[in-house]
Image 1 (cartoon, rainbow, N blue to C red):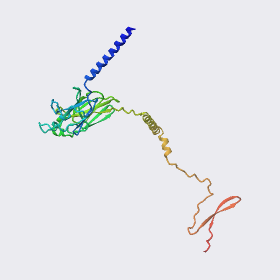
Image 2 (cartoon, rainbow, N blue to C red; image 1 turned 180 degrees about the vertical axis):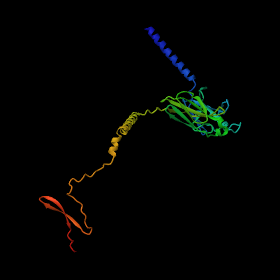
Image 3 (cartoon, rainbow, N blue to C red; image 1 turned 30 degrees about the vertical axis):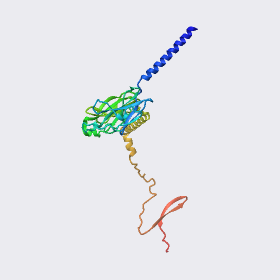
Image 4 (tube, one colour; image 1 turned 90 degrees about the vertical axis):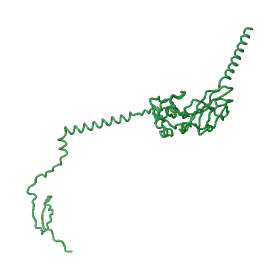
Length: 311
């Protein structure tokens, strides 16, 4: 019995020790990074990961490796930040020099999460607008060739397409292009995602666009069996008609000609000669023919018509 109590005490001790160690480790872990970090019209917003966490916003200018903290948004408990305090660069007036990369980090008890770069859902001088069109086996990325960076740098300003399956992080750079691009040989029913950024002389301009995802539709397998059967039946009927016409044309020509010739009627000879004779009359006289019945026989007789009664 004593041994059982000792074993139970040892198990309880191990349990409390493990729980305390886990809580200590959890309290020493950095907070989760913020989600959905987006910038729009000078306002940076994000979704918090956990409560009791503060956030710090850093920015980096185009073609620079130096990160700077935005004074108004250091260890702020808020979930947004006004970035209008970031002034323009003093280098030159090129439009890309007004673009900055924005990053937000979560902080708790001196421990910081990984920084999450902001994206822009709407196009502007720093972020390209685009749309995607899924088709069976492919995905077309529609891009605009008319933008301010292209006006400034011509073909040295391009779009960099980042592409991958949904869930892949980060998306991989797929292609630098000036015009719209179609990505082919994609798996039907799979969801793919696209993100686009401007580049100037192969240097990426931030912020990038926000990610857009679409499912590749399946091909429409149309049942063409009735159409094929109808076509075959039509071909067979046409062949039979052609063969019949050929047979009639080659082997029944004479019979067809005879059938098409007009019928010639011949008046038979007078079988009763002497019974009828042609008589001539004076045009001034009007004759009338009557029938005389004799012993049941009808005999034609010609005579002068009686004068008409005076009116």
